[in-house]
Image (cartoon, rainbow, N blue to C red; front, side, top):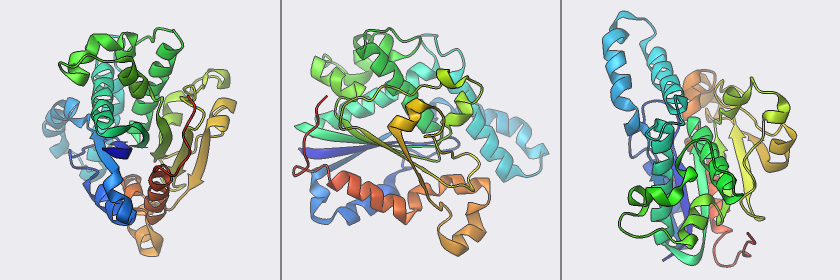
Length: 292
């Protein structure tokens, strides 16, 4: 059994199922003797969206210039629009993306010791998707039925989460974040979704436990990645923003950090890999426990 689980969720645009493999390999090397105590898992929701996006691109893409940038924007912003579209419907993409998150967390729990800890890493649109999931989960914990998603009645979706195994109260506690010690976000675009709201309406999810921390990494040259702490007092109390250069040094800046494609460079940034390794290893058995 493992002591700490890292579960990732990808961002907008065309994404392969193995999107986190390179990162996991680097973290395994950095962990050294601690590597055997760590579990790595992924949430992959691009398969819910890709077919229709490819169909549209094939229909119109060949007639346009700037194909690489247009493809990036079409697949990226179509993801965001689709996940918000009619999300209250029982078979919405919002619903199915949450089911994917819950399934990945359930699988992680099966690999952890009874007091194993959870770290979540989200990128780009995945930050918003995960934030909505945690918002709904914390609402349900407070006895408030969410407007959409699986947390309206989590046990109803047992088959898609745990198969034939009944969801226990302990499972549900894990799925809603009771053992979530750290959330790390990169290239986060939550401000795009809340910018039109009054400040008093810009409220983050409730802190899932006393030990929880949220570190948000952003590159000031990345037009899709934003700081969060100044959005509202609630975000200011919950989030620590950390500036990085996602392009990776001078030559990386020339190649990537000044253009939208730098948005996908965060997980190659040494500062972020080092921070992730620190987050994971400090949660190993010598670390203090949390109080929900």
